[in-house]
Structures are given as structure tokens and as C-alpha cells.
Length: 319
Length: 222
Figure 1 (cartoon, chains in turn purple, blue):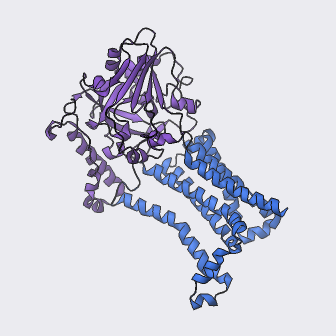
Figure 2 (cartoon, rainbow over the protein chains, first blue to last red; figure 1 turned 180 degrees about the vertical axis):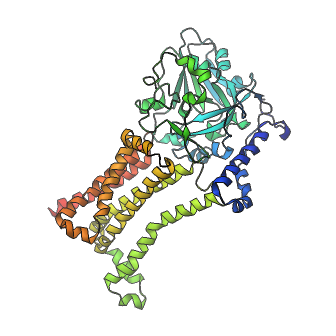
Figure 3 (tube, helix red, strand yellow; figure 1 turned 180 degrees about the horizontal axis):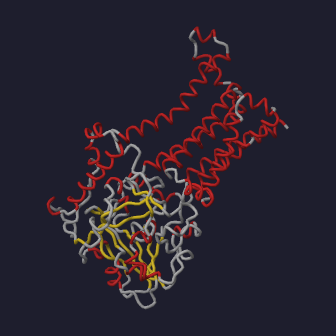
């Protein structure tokens, strides 16, 4: 079994968390201008600390807390401010309504143009791999952003094992569709199940993370347990949660938000401050925990890794 | 009618008996409505104070969004409450409620102004160019601004002096604009939410119900 109860000293993230909280408090003190009163209650920030099962040892990558260029978003914001309409449309609904969501056993059906289709358990997919920690900028289409230390496996490594054939041009993903367990699905906010997709080269890009955790622990339910994608150069809704289906297709697969409002949400949905959105200006973003908006970076700051994939493509048309 | 009976039976203190119906409205009912109408603003101020002092989480992870949505919610609620005055009078026959209509309408405008101010001053931090682009490019903001302009005209002409100056007929015609503001406000809310969400549909349903009560009453009276 993969998950062991580790000694506290084993866990890398225990080094990160207090610093994030420290930074967060410091920021708060600055803005509050009433340092005296807040010091007395300073411990409140630590009460909602990471509570899930910890992953014993994680490889460090070049995408880490030092290189990301921003402070980590506090754990309680990462896990308390979520868009996960399967558990309600309010930002705190997922944390409230996903408490009892059971994610084991968990099966993922793999089909389409690949040599190893079939139904895989969470353990089948995850256990053979070494888990990595990746600190990424996360940019929501609603013009807010976070910095999150994710835990996962490069999606490319998973896809290689599933061995797509030459006909596979895209990978489609599907979220669990179970209104009993996901009460938000009892109303048709979107056409369930939630669907997302990537071009095969996007899915194989080293940045794309098959994600099972954050802050060194298993994914909290409200963050898309037990398995989600993180595609850091695209708007957050592309990073599909609670995945139960992976399909290799030759045609561009339908995706949920594009089906709901095609003018607003394209298939690519790359973070792009220059491409106008009918609902929000994407030129700036508010990093959660900060007051002033800051300019949004082209491809969320991952140009170096991903820009080549879109060479010669009109990003305004293929938004 | 039932409500007015409650009023007279509960307020049994001798001093209140001595009050005329008019002074009861002026000295009791209106102050109570004032206090209730200010309560959401007072509560928000309390949360903001907490966020700056004893509890940084009082306004959630995104305080700017929280404040703006809170004020928008109350602006739309007060608009619907103001629009409910006449239907309530029709349904209950309780005429004195009409005396609250202007007060409630002005409170709707009060929360609209706060909502707009929080968007310009807190969310956009007085980036007027960004605000202008939003008004021109984001349809839901265009619609919201249109509602604001209508309500501003109504608020500016809400005094007795203005009624006299405009003349009752013209004033009445102008103040039919509140229906447009109600419709625009509900559309603004519906468009702001992503996907097909329940809350904006409920607000829209209430608005349509209020319109239906008026329409049926008018039809019945011929």
C-alpha cells in the first residue's frame, strides 16, 4: 500500500506550511495596521492545518517554492475557496458538501485509441510511480489566482503506460457522475458529467500533472480527490477533478464549459492576458491573499515550457 | 388588514394609544424599517472590522469578491422589496405600507451605490480605464450600469419638491422606470453567474410574481 503514516520529520511540506502561514500573517499585519490586536489572535490562521494522510517522500522538482516567484497560498484558502460545481456553486460549498465523499475504491476507465484499455484502480495507476511535488501558479478564469504545492505524476508517464496508438490525437477526461454522492449534480448547472480534454501533445507536456495531492497530503475532497489534472498554463476549469474516465480520441472532444457557453470558453483556454473574455478582463488577476490586482502573465508564466506547441496558431481564434 | 390589527393589538402602551395613525407610522414603523434596512450594512462593517483585527478569515479567502457580492445581493433584494410594496398592499389591503415605498426604494439605491463603489474603488482600485472597458465590453456590467443610471434618475427625483416640479403624471411615468431597473438587475445577476444557477432564477421568479400580481389587479379593476 502506498500511503504510510510518516514521521513528522519525513514530510517536506511541514517545512513549507509554517512559512506560508508566516508570510500570510505578515501580509495581514501589514494591511491591517493594527498589529497589536492581531498578534494576540495570531494562532487562528493555523487552526485549519493540513489534516489528510501525508505522502511519505516526494521528489523535488525545478518547479518549487523558490522558483515559482510568489508566496504559497495558505492551505486554508486552497482548500476553502473552490470552484467544484459538483458540490455546489458557492466558493465554500465544496468544502462543506464534499466532507463525506468516499474516494476508495476508485476506478478509472481507459478506452479509445490505445493499446492498454481497461478499468484501472487508483492503486494500479498511481503506485508504480514516484510522486513529485510541483509548485505551480494556478489561474482561474474568474481572474483570481493561487500558488499551490501539488503532488502528482507527470501525465506523460501515465499515458506512456496506456500506450496511445497513432490515431490518438486528443485525450478526453470525465469526472464522476453520481448525483447521490455529488449533490451539486442534482441540478443541471452544467451538462453532467463534467468533461475536459487536451491535445495529445498538451497532455504529454512535462508540466501537465496527474495530481493526487497538495501540501504534501492526499487531495482533500473539495480539491478533486482522489485524482485530478493540473494544467498550469490553462484556466483552472481545464484542470478536471475526480477523474473516472480517460479516452484517447482522434477528434477534439467536447468539453463542459465550451458546451455551456462556447463564446466564453474555448477548447484551448490558455491563460492569455491579451485575449478578451466576454465576462472578465483577463489582463489582471487578484492573487488570493493580496489586495491589488497584478498583471496576468502570458500562458500564466509558462511560456518557456509550452509556447512552442502553439506556434503559428491564432490564439485569439483558438481561445 | 391582518397586519394592521397586529399593530394595534401589540402596541398597547397607553402612549401609543394616544398617537395618531400618522405619528405611529412616522415615529415607530419608519424608524424600525430604517434600522432593519441598515442592518446588512452594519453587519458588513462588523465583518470588515473583524477581518482587519481579530479574524482575517471573516470575509473568506477573497474579501474583495465577498464584499462586492454581498452588496450586490442586498441591492437586488431591496429593489425587489421596494417593488413588493404595491403587490403587498393589493394582497393584504394594508394601505400604510405605501408610506414605506420611497424609503425602501432609496435603500435599494443606497446598496446599489455601495455595490458600484466597491467595484470601482476596491475591486478595480480606481482604474477608470479598466472600469470603462468593463462597461463597454462585459455585457453583464453594461446591464448593471444601465440599472444604476435608471435608479439614479429615480433617486434624484424622489423628493416632494421634484414631484411638484415634474407634475404627478410625468413623475409617475418616470418612476415606472423602477420596473426596468428590476428587470435589468435580475438579468445582471443571472449573467454574472456561470452556468445555469438556481439563485438568479429564484430572484427572477420573485420579480415575475410581483409583476403578475400588479397585472392581475389592473386587469380586474379594468
